Image (cartoon, rainbow, N blue to C red; front, side):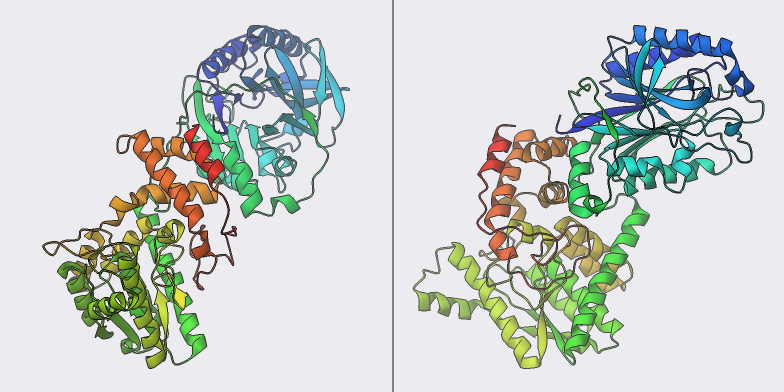
Length: 633
């Protein structure tokens, strides 16, 4: 479903050197995984025997039991579609290897030996095992079959996965790095990894980082508390990460079997590798491809999605993110002003979100340059739809910030323009609206020429994506500071600035945050806003969600629809989401011509639509196949 694969990390309740008992626990967990539509499940290192067998690993009695137990495992799981990766000690050419056995539907698909053996402090694996680093292109006789054996195996057909064992991850260049280069979308790690103070947090960080470095999913599990406690204790840690994000984690030190699952977005990983990394430039090695039977498919996605993907949920991270973005905006504008020389910043102020943020950025830029606030020229230009709420907020804020302030009413000039072009001023159409936007832009550009300044653009990423700007009007500026900040995030940045301002300024900023988004181009009624943007183009929180998944991960419309249903469950019905998604797609394609000539603007986030940076798209690309795919969803 939409490129998702469900994976699992299992921690069975083992008995040391009791293979039959361990097989029973593994079968039980495999059946649970099958019932939960898991495609691939990984079990801990040496789980068929237990990791802590010590010199018992050399006993023929143990290995006879392992052969018998493995055959039983294959027999009892031959009806299961779920792939299992289990650990066992195996002999090959008079050497003992710590191995991962990959099996499905009663068949062993391949065996991967451990490359790096832990042999320091409490570990002495070299006492028993041989490193498998040089084992490649080999075949192993096991459980009555002959299977591929070596560290050169990648499993799967279209969806590929690799396997490494415990210490492999802790090495300087983990095998999983090369597996990912050779196409593995997922890495499964069978570990023992005893518990030590602070080790769990480091291990968690290591798993997350490796998934990010390899742009993959990393599924990790380790031995539990029922291993021998002669010298060590094991905690049974299980983790599932995707490209740096921990998707699932179990409570450690559990006394019973544990099985955690997560849905991995393979399509997203593939797209991200191609568009945002140097993955394609890395050197591939020759890995043997081991085909699997068809993978278990999911019928629904068990994964939560943040409805505000641009806004960090954690308050502390949210605060630091807003601070960093604000500093990037201010520093960029300061550089542009400094480069030009003794220039002023000219900004049109409406009392709305975007122009307010641009003004705050300009104020901080002047502080960075140790320049007078009077070098900021703020202009409010009341029109037919301007309400007293937005007007008063604009005027008061400019005075309190100490900037140079101008008020230029545009109504007479626009009416004269209507007369000149023969337009009926009572017809409130696109001409009526765009004429006001262009008149305001003309004033700003001419005033910038007059005072020796640059026009600072205020348009945000959401408006740029939707093309919700007047071409030749607010679409233009000499430098943009909000162009890669979505509307949903603008509010939070203004809120961040408000926290450090004096009470009167903070109160105005909070009211601006609470004001409905509107261009105020249609005549007001009883001094109230009648033209609310989100009633025209739809909720910005939806559009920002669409934009994030469409541009960052190349998600198909039907997939975006499904993810939005999950993210906005209980708030928007499917048909409502679909309606606004259709509008988003249409507007995104239809308005590329505006983005193709957008002014210089600073990029502060992972998504921007500048034709000189992130997004290059023909202005006359057809939208039909995207709309058709959505309709067929």
